[in-house]
Structures are given as structure tokens and as C-alpha cells.
Length: 494
Ligand code: NA7
Image 1 (cartoon, rainbow, N blue to C red):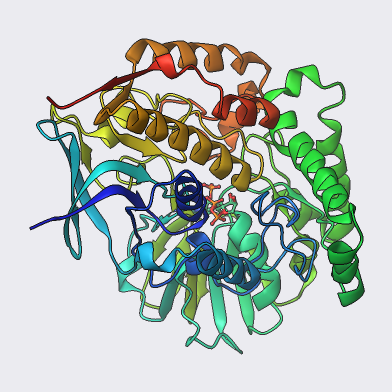
Image 2 (cartoon, rainbow, N blue to C red):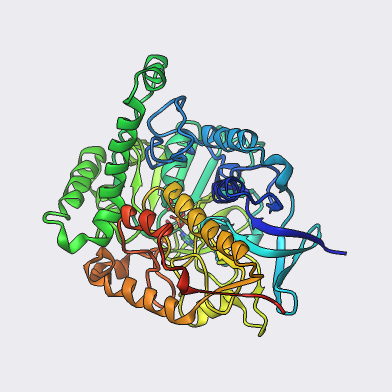
């Protein structure tokens, strides 16, 4: 017998937590959240590698309705985000709703009953509504490199860090130079014997205004009226300009590429050796792929025990990595900072979802195009919602996305409940009109630059689309509670 719940939320990261809070506030209590982790926090549960920290200011990287005053830095370390997730679970009484160590394996829509049938690693479930609250960076990408399984030393992906492996005095190789490697490399370089960094595409790395928030500053945030709001406002404005602003309104902002000049000047000031500096210089426009922020990454390459390898990897052997030019690096430990599957068919969503006609959502998106209505719902998939779906995220703080998605989903489910409908589905014409509108804004985005072809950016799908929402955060938030309800079809099973 399958357990029935009115709402099943997949994921107990911040997206799941924020959505559950919104639904509970709206009066829905038969909610089950499932997560394959053993605790809450999503990416902040899984990513506990040395140096892990947020790279959006903490004043923005939190719920607007639950602003903390005790972040230790302007950019909080990962463990504080994990604690914040635990705090939210406790404060909003979510623990009783969460089933951990449960991986969703498949979901099918049962048209006769207007319910989702969900198979999980812990048995089957039924739900009136299913909300996929999995983030885009949850499925580790293992590199498909010849011989990887033959390596005899220790191997770990950064999002599954094995703290029992002592790197002290070891010869360590790290593959990848994305945002994660940027944080790991400066932390481990001082303790290892030798660190070889295998770089395929250089990353734009900017300085980070990462300052400690001593006790007195935290006291000020708590006690002085208005300080918290002003800090949040300043932080939101900074995030809005540097992410959605520069990305989506690139061609409209005079001097937008001056940020790139600043980043180059920073690179030149940090790296002493001109050859290494050249190797670290990206050949694509800043913004084509997610840039990084770190004050110590670039200068780590001045260390005698750090080598930047840019020849492509040919093969991994039992104890080394061999490059295409024949050079070889002997290693004791191999770290895979190789990122995540983002828009791959088995990652978005991370389990097969079939509608009543047997259409597989991941394949529909992958083989056709990644289309949805505001990132939330997809025509043909009734009672199924995504907090992070195609063309839903505008690139600002992830918490803004969570709150706007939760507001949208809550509004739809509340309306269905008021109308005694058991099925709600976005209309195909509403979805198409939305996609046409959002894509018509694409010409002013940075992603149209030719040099983006050199970036190897996970922003792009294999079709070359960038399924971001080209909109300001104000527009996204405003719209999340005012979109036309007529864009949805509400009906009952019989
Ligand atoms: P990213 O940003 O996807 O970075 C992954 C890195 O791994 C990137 O440098 C890749 O090179 C490299 N990579 C992946 N596969 C290979 C193979 N097969 N060979 C060589 N190099 C490879 O993931 P992160 O974990 O760093 O960051 C994820 C997000 O977390 C980040 O955007 C922030 O939002 C927080 P490539 O660039 O593809 O050439």
C-alpha cells in the first residue's frame, strides 16, 4: 500500500524548506519532504570540502522573512549555511515532514485519480501534488576520462569529500577550476607536498569583499533599528547589478565590460609568473559562465609546490595522470572538482518523470527544448511543479528564486483547493507565450557574445540555449503573485 500525501516535495535543501514553509503558512499540512541525504541543507549538506563558503553576500543569501544576525563573515562559510538550514527546519516545525535517506527513483501520473505515483528507495508514495525542489547542482559529474577506474590512490569528488583522507605531505591532483576548485585550492595548497591543478578552461576570478563580522558588528545588526534592512538592501543591489544586471542587460549598460578590465587587473596583480598568468587568462567574456570570487585563489599559483597543468588529460593510470603531450604527474590523491550535471537528461529532474501519455519530462526537455512556464510548471505535466525549472532563474540570490517559486506554486495549489479541483495544468499556449517573451529579450544578454563558445559553460544546454529568466528580480517577485490564473486549467477527475 502506498502512503498518500497531498503534497510530496522532493528535496530538503533550501528550496524544499522554503516551499514547505510557504505551503504551511497557506494552510497546507499534509506535506511529505523526501531527500536522499541524511540531513537538511541540500548543497550545504553535501558540500563540506575545505574552504566551502557562499559566494553571494550572506545578507542576500538567506530568506527575507528569516534574516540572521549571526553570520561570522559577509560571505558565510558552508557550515553556517548548514546550521541555518537546521535552524529553519526546527523553527518552522518541518522535521516531522521530512523523510531522509530516501531517493526518488521514478514518478508517474495516474490520470484516473489525478495523483502522482512515486517510487522511492524506501517504498512507494502517492501524492496529489509533486514539487521537485532539487537544485541544479546536486548530481555530481564524474569525468569520463580513460583509465579513471584504474587509479590506485584515493579519489573523491568535491561534493562527497572524504575527511578521513589526510592530504598532508601528499602529491595531490585536482581536476577542474570552477567555483569549487577556486575555494579548495588555496586551502589545501599549504599542506600538500605538491598540488597539480588540471585546468581545461580558465575561470574569471574576482576579489571578494569577504570581511569578518565581529561580535560588535553582529550586535549592531541585531540592536540598531534599520541596520539589518540597510545591509540587506545594499547587498541586494550589489547582487542585482553583478548577476542579472550584467548578464541580461549587458548591451544596455554602458561600460559593462569594464568589470572584465578590473578582473584582468586583479589577475595581473596577483600572479607573478607571466606564463602562468597567461594560462589563467580566460578567452571568453566575463559572464559567459559563472565567475568566481576569491581573494586567495590566483596568488596560490605563486607557490613553489603548485603547478598549473593546461595540457589536456590523455589518461589516468594506476598512480598518475598522463597528458596529451606525454608529460606525466605522479599522484597519491585525485580530487575531482568536476562540477555537476545541470541540464542533462538524468539530472533535470534527477529521476524519470512520466505523464499520463508516458512522455518522459527529462527527455522532452533534452530532446526538444527546455521549455516551461516561468520555471514552475510544464504543459502536459499536471500537478507537477519545479522550483528551479527552465527559464525560471534570473541569476540573483537563489533565495529570491526559492521565495518567488514558492509563492507561485502556493498560489496555484491554493486556487485549486478553493475551486475543488483535483488537477491543475499550465496551458500550452500560456507556456509558449512566456517562452516567446523571455527569448525575445535574449538579444541584450551577455550570452550572445561569440566568445561564449570558448567558455564550456554549464549555462548553455546542448542545443546552445541559456534557460535563464531574462528579468529583474523585482519583476520576478512581482509576477510570482500576480501571473494570470487563467494561464492554468483547473479540473476534477470525475
Ligand atoms: P563547475 O563550475 O561546473 O566546474 C567544473 C570544473 O571541472 C570546470 O573547470 C570544468 O572544466 C572541469 N571539468 C569537468 N569535467 C572535466 C574533464 N573531463 N576534464 C577536465 N576538466 C573537467 O563546478 P563547480 O563545482 O566548480 O561549481 C559549481 C557551482 O557551485 C558554481 O557555479 C557556483 O554556483 C557554486 P570546463 O570549464 O568545463 O572546461
